[in-house]
Length: 170
Picture 1 (tube, rainbow, N blue to C red):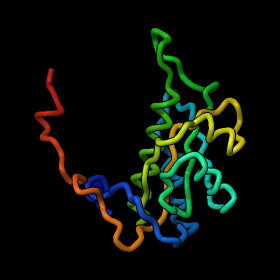
Picture 2: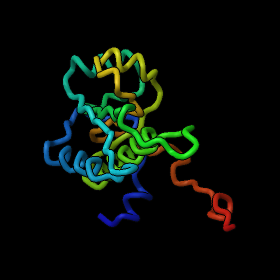
Picture 3: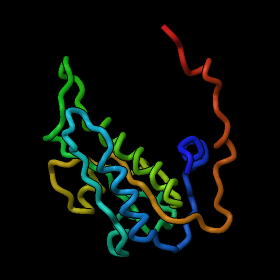
Picture 4: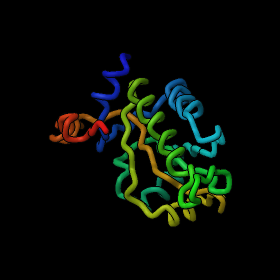
Protein backbone atom coordinates (compact mmCIF):
# COMPACT_ATOMS: atom_id res chain seq x y z
CA UNK A 1 0.00 0.00 0.00
CA UNK A 2 1.20 3.53 -0.74
CA UNK A 3 2.51 5.18 2.47
CA UNK A 4 0.53 8.41 1.96
CA UNK A 5 -2.65 6.31 1.71
CA UNK A 6 -1.79 4.60 5.00
CA UNK A 7 -1.20 7.84 6.91
CA UNK A 8 -4.25 9.61 5.49
CA UNK A 9 -6.81 6.82 5.72
CA UNK A 10 -6.14 4.85 8.91
CA UNK A 11 -8.55 5.73 11.66
CA UNK A 12 -9.32 4.69 15.23
CA UNK A 13 -11.81 1.84 14.93
CA UNK A 14 -14.25 1.82 17.82
CA UNK A 15 -16.35 -1.20 16.83
CA UNK A 16 -14.66 -4.52 16.05
CA UNK A 17 -16.02 -7.78 14.66
CA UNK A 18 -15.03 -11.09 16.25
CA UNK A 19 -12.74 -12.00 13.31
CA UNK A 20 -9.22 -12.62 14.62
CA UNK A 21 -6.06 -11.15 13.11
CA UNK A 22 -4.16 -13.95 11.38
CA UNK A 23 -0.63 -14.95 12.37
CA UNK A 24 0.99 -13.48 9.24
CA UNK A 25 -0.67 -10.09 9.77
CA UNK A 26 0.26 -10.07 13.44
CA UNK A 27 3.88 -10.93 12.68
CA UNK A 28 4.03 -8.15 10.07
CA UNK A 29 2.70 -5.66 12.62
CA UNK A 30 5.03 -6.80 15.39
CA UNK A 31 8.02 -6.73 13.03
CA UNK A 32 7.29 -3.06 12.27
CA UNK A 33 7.53 -2.34 15.99
CA UNK A 34 10.72 -4.35 16.31
CA UNK A 35 12.53 -2.26 13.69
CA UNK A 36 11.33 1.11 15.00
CA UNK A 37 14.12 3.51 15.94
CA UNK A 38 14.92 4.07 19.60
CA UNK A 39 17.40 6.37 21.34
CA UNK A 40 20.89 4.86 21.26
CA UNK A 41 19.17 1.75 19.81
CA UNK A 42 18.35 0.64 23.36
CA UNK A 43 15.17 -1.11 22.14
CA UNK A 44 13.60 -0.83 25.57
CA UNK A 45 10.12 -1.69 24.29
CA UNK A 46 8.22 -4.81 25.25
CA UNK A 47 5.03 -5.72 23.42
CA UNK A 48 2.51 -8.05 25.05
CA UNK A 49 0.05 -9.75 22.69
CA UNK A 50 -3.27 -10.33 24.45
CA UNK A 51 -5.75 -12.66 22.76
CA UNK A 52 -7.01 -15.05 25.44
CA UNK A 53 -10.47 -14.42 26.83
CA UNK A 54 -9.05 -14.51 30.38
CA UNK A 55 -6.59 -11.69 29.71
CA UNK A 56 -9.02 -9.65 27.58
CA UNK A 57 -11.43 -9.67 30.55
CA UNK A 58 -8.62 -8.25 32.70
CA UNK A 59 -8.15 -5.44 30.18
CA UNK A 60 -11.92 -4.83 30.17
CA UNK A 61 -11.80 -4.37 33.95
CA UNK A 62 -9.39 -1.46 33.49
CA UNK A 63 -10.80 0.27 30.40
CA UNK A 64 -14.10 0.46 28.51
CA UNK A 65 -12.15 1.10 25.30
CA UNK A 66 -11.38 -2.37 23.97
CA UNK A 67 -14.42 -2.07 21.69
CA UNK A 68 -14.54 -5.90 21.42
CA UNK A 69 -11.17 -6.08 19.63
CA UNK A 70 -10.04 -9.73 19.58
CA UNK A 71 -6.36 -8.76 19.96
CA UNK A 72 -4.82 -6.06 22.12
CA UNK A 73 -1.16 -5.13 22.09
CA UNK A 74 0.16 -3.74 25.36
CA UNK A 75 3.09 -1.47 24.59
CA UNK A 76 5.46 -1.12 27.52
CA UNK A 77 9.09 -0.19 28.05
CA UNK A 78 11.84 -1.06 30.51
CA UNK A 79 12.24 2.11 32.55
CA UNK A 80 15.65 0.87 33.75
CA UNK A 81 16.99 0.75 30.18
CA UNK A 82 16.40 4.27 28.88
CA UNK A 83 18.66 7.06 27.68
CA UNK A 84 18.65 10.14 29.93
CA UNK A 85 18.94 13.39 28.01
CA UNK A 86 21.12 16.38 28.92
CA UNK A 87 19.64 18.24 31.86
CA UNK A 88 18.45 14.90 33.29
CA UNK A 89 14.78 15.96 33.21
CA UNK A 90 13.68 13.63 30.41
CA UNK A 91 14.50 10.16 29.19
CA UNK A 92 13.77 8.17 26.07
CA UNK A 93 11.23 5.70 27.46
CA UNK A 94 7.93 7.34 26.53
CA UNK A 95 9.10 8.71 23.21
CA UNK A 96 10.72 5.45 22.10
CA UNK A 97 7.64 3.43 23.04
CA UNK A 98 5.52 6.02 21.20
CA UNK A 99 7.60 5.58 18.05
CA UNK A 100 7.19 1.81 18.33
CA UNK A 101 3.44 2.18 18.88
CA UNK A 102 3.13 4.46 15.85
CA UNK A 103 4.95 1.91 13.71
CA UNK A 104 2.56 -0.80 14.99
CA UNK A 105 -0.48 1.35 14.21
CA UNK A 106 0.57 2.21 10.67
CA UNK A 107 1.73 -1.35 9.95
CA UNK A 108 -1.68 -2.63 11.07
CA UNK A 109 -3.48 -0.50 8.50
CA UNK A 110 -0.96 -1.49 5.86
CA UNK A 111 -1.69 -5.16 6.67
CA UNK A 112 -5.44 -4.61 6.34
CA UNK A 113 -6.03 -4.64 10.09
CA UNK A 114 -8.02 -1.98 11.93
CA UNK A 115 -6.74 -0.51 15.17
CA UNK A 116 -7.38 1.97 17.95
CA UNK A 117 -4.75 3.64 20.16
CA UNK A 118 -5.97 3.51 23.77
CA UNK A 119 -4.73 5.61 26.69
CA UNK A 120 -7.94 5.63 28.71
CA UNK A 121 -6.75 3.46 31.61
CA UNK A 122 -4.59 3.62 34.72
CA UNK A 123 -1.25 2.05 33.71
CA UNK A 124 -0.42 0.94 37.25
CA UNK A 125 -3.75 -0.83 37.69
CA UNK A 126 -3.37 -2.57 34.33
CA UNK A 127 0.20 -3.56 35.15
CA UNK A 128 -1.04 -5.28 38.31
CA UNK A 129 -3.94 -6.96 36.48
CA UNK A 130 -1.60 -8.39 33.85
CA UNK A 131 1.16 -9.13 36.41
CA UNK A 132 3.83 -7.32 34.41
CA UNK A 133 7.37 -6.82 35.70
CA UNK A 134 8.01 -3.95 38.10
CA UNK A 135 10.67 -2.42 35.83
CA UNK A 136 8.22 -1.95 32.97
CA UNK A 137 5.93 0.99 32.36
CA UNK A 138 2.87 0.66 30.12
CA UNK A 139 2.58 3.39 27.51
CA UNK A 140 -0.60 2.40 25.67
CA UNK A 141 -2.87 -0.32 24.37
CA UNK A 142 -3.44 -0.98 20.69
CA UNK A 143 -6.73 -2.65 19.83
CA UNK A 144 -6.38 -4.80 16.71
CA UNK A 145 -8.99 -6.55 14.60
CA UNK A 146 -11.43 -5.91 11.80
CA UNK A 147 -14.11 -3.26 11.76
CA UNK A 148 -17.60 -4.50 12.53
CA UNK A 149 -20.44 -3.65 10.21
CA UNK A 150 -21.27 0.02 10.54
CA UNK A 151 -17.88 1.02 11.96
CA UNK A 152 -16.45 4.16 10.44
CA UNK A 153 -14.16 7.05 11.27
CA UNK A 154 -15.39 9.80 13.57
CA UNK A 155 -17.12 12.60 11.62
CA UNK A 156 -14.15 14.94 12.07
CA UNK A 157 -11.52 12.34 11.07
CA UNK A 158 -10.61 13.91 7.74
CA UNK A 159 -10.72 17.49 9.05
CA UNK A 160 -7.19 18.85 9.35
CA UNK A 161 -5.76 22.27 10.03
CA UNK A 162 -3.73 23.92 7.30
CA UNK A 163 0.05 23.60 7.55
CA UNK A 164 0.27 27.34 8.18
CA UNK A 165 -1.65 26.79 11.44
CA UNK A 166 0.63 24.08 12.75
CA UNK A 167 4.06 24.85 11.30
CA UNK A 168 6.34 27.85 11.83
CA UNK A 169 9.59 28.33 9.95
CA UNK A 170 12.24 29.98 12.10
